[in-house]
Length: 170
Image 1: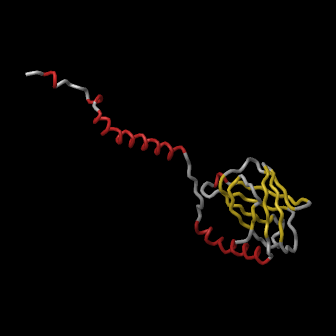
Image 2 (image 1 turned 90 degrees about the vertical axis):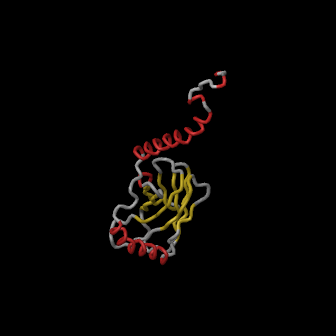
Image 3 (image 1 turned 120 degrees about the horizontal axis):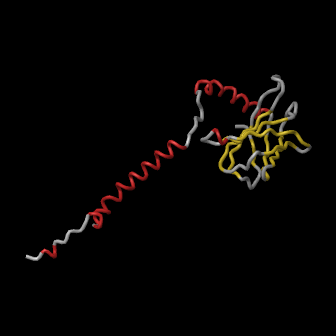
């Protein structure tokens, strides 16, 4: 009897061993990668008080209705870190300052708030850092008194902007 046909080959040198082990190794790698990402990254809570937000929706709808009744519209331009806005409509009193919010859809830590000051041909302001990605843009007045009506304008854009963004009431 010839034993040369029955040569022992270790398992790790067999192709079938690696064929069967590759999916198992990939599952462990992907599992630990997902565990690492879950621990390191914080999702953040987008809305943490649903009851309060539910009550505030009436206020938001009223602000949209006021903006529509005043026929307000804005045109936003971003040039580097410089923000300029022209505002059209039938405002009884023109605000000295406006609040421009760049709201990131999923992370509140990515939100940016810019105060726009009235200039000769509209409003101007400056960003602290460049904006990139998809943002909801919301514009509202900064009134010093509570007598003036609150309104807001909306827009959705992907930054950096190549064309001016129209801000309209919802």
